[in-house]
Image (cartoon, rainbow, N blue to C red):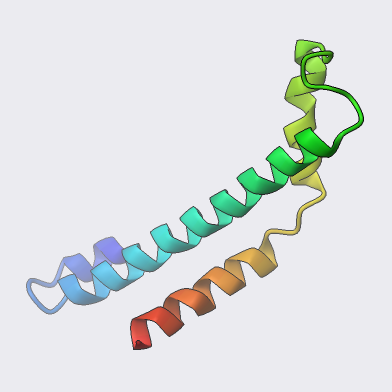
Length: 87
């Protein structure tokens, strides 16, 4: 969608920047939250990361991500971006 707006010289670059900036902001916030949840899952597990096999260690992030509902995170990031744009 950002590319579509950039087809219009001058006036299209502003909406394109807003769309692309919002997308990147949302992805960055969501990625950070997922990363922190994965780390929390790893360090709160009863098994030490040093005692895990490689397969067990690789499975832990997938378990943490499967339990996480990302839609509220995306909505919160979107609302936060809109609020910061108004300020």
